[in-house]
Image (tube, rainbow, N blue to C red; front, side, top):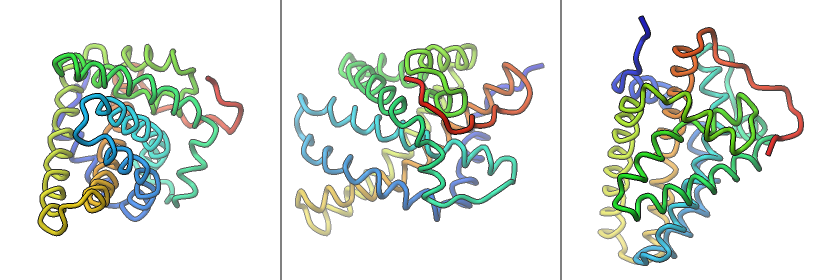
Length: 237
């Protein structure tokens, strides 16, 4: 009998990995999400620019997840520790595909949210493991979308449940930091700084969850251990 994805178990595993690896996950996020915070600060309050801000956030999140997935694999195996440089190097040969996939996913999900939110949530669900697929299976951008949907198929509601839980956690953390920012200094600069901090603290949760979901779905549907990262070589676009 197949072992179904468990929302609570997935989140528990993700937070366990986050706690043990925060020293490398947060500095990497701080470096990557500074640009995102600035873009979101510029886009704040504009319905026209909102999809652009969301797209940039998803591109950064896809790239970040691609850098984190190998760490999650090795932490599960108990094999080694990573530095920030190690995480960047683990995905350097697929950076362009990750950015391309993040761009397409960001545009699709951004438009989906404008169309009464539900289409955006649907796309977030079926595209939940695009980054792990690109990094570990080295498929092209377009194939990654189909591969992600293939892995999620049959577990869509459970994946959706995990995603909604993560979204709620992120919203709560960001709301608390936003309230603190307003209380300290209700200026654009303060909002950008606290948005940067919020992104950097919550990005590891989303990234680790995506990796954990991938490894679970891969193991249940196809059996065996997750695929090891391919040796460095030309990126597939």
